[in-house]
Length: 536
Image (spheres, one colour):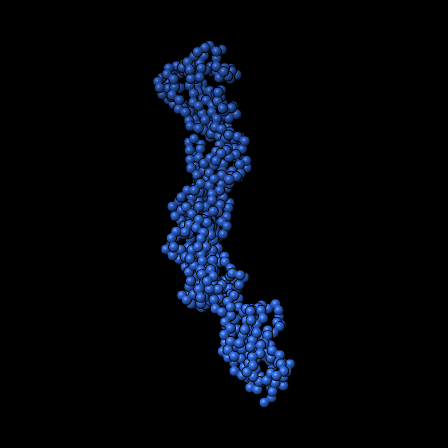
């Protein structure tokens, strides 16, 4: 075998020991039938035209060009993996004889890589030839195409109500990979909020899924967030350093390795079922007070408290009030209009307003609160806490609230009637019972030893409460009294009632609001159909 100067890679000869690559090459030559021996190219070193990275399973080429003439002695192109990460199974070996034209012709040599299914780092090997100055080569990079890839991007949460996320709600976006992945440290995904081309980026932080094929990212809606046509998810590209350039950041590897994923994904252009409006909004309007002492209606001087429950903390600045209707019937809007003043709650998610019932207020159906655009009054503002974002002026009207009636008027007597008749049809005899019914204009409840005065022949007689036919009936429009005729009772022109004959005698009569009854009434003239103890 012919001896050649010993050449080290990219260095001048320093010893007489043949490099392993040359030994391998010469061994291959020896095995080929009549293969020409490698020759060392003379003259200046060739200019190597190296290719860029070659994707796994694809081909490329590199070129050689000498700056001047050289001997036509054949040279041999070799491949080498010594000191590189690529193995012999990652590329097709080259042992190729080159015969030049002795001038400046560029010789192109094809290079092929081999496809595999392993997730691995990019790998390198060399292609080159020996010259009198050493091994001149190109380092070829094999780009691995088996990094975990994102196969789907989807919004996997839903708004709690309708298709609009509100402040405090979570938006979840799931990335699906073609194989399992690990998240190392923080990672985030870029969401885009806005209408049309006016997009504002928001970062959804990594939530869960490391070790699986599904990574979930979450963003909590803030009061300033708005998107009326549906959120978007920014697409992601990769930089030349194979890292995320935008849209997706963090460190994510193939499961159990340190091989980065392919961060590229198309994103979501517009998710129309996932709109956003983070402005504070009223979730519930309700009366939080009750009539005092268990009464069924509010009286004059008592305060009705109304709460607006928001979906986030809010702050009141300036004068703010809340409208309500008292005694709304038909279209008497102006007459029924009242305003409750702000009481408390700034800095929380509940604002409380109060209205103090005035004499003359009456609402037997229950107060009502108008819709949001009309209800909140005043020159002040309601904003999300810590922001300049004002609340969304919309909430539905309540209609009448039957548990919150108002009654400031005392119950009054509408009539007094004798409901019994003499047995003989003309005059009550001794032992017969005279019954009197006092009728009020609204249901009343009574207590104590009430009495009603009868004028029998100029003498006052006291009628007592008649036992209740239905003891469980608390309120009634009528109160009945009875008097049993005694010996000596006579009245030849009929029983009469003087003015204001109903006596409490330490008892009470009141309506459902607790208003004490007005017991005044006009006198009732004698009735000849109700004489006592004598015949005409």
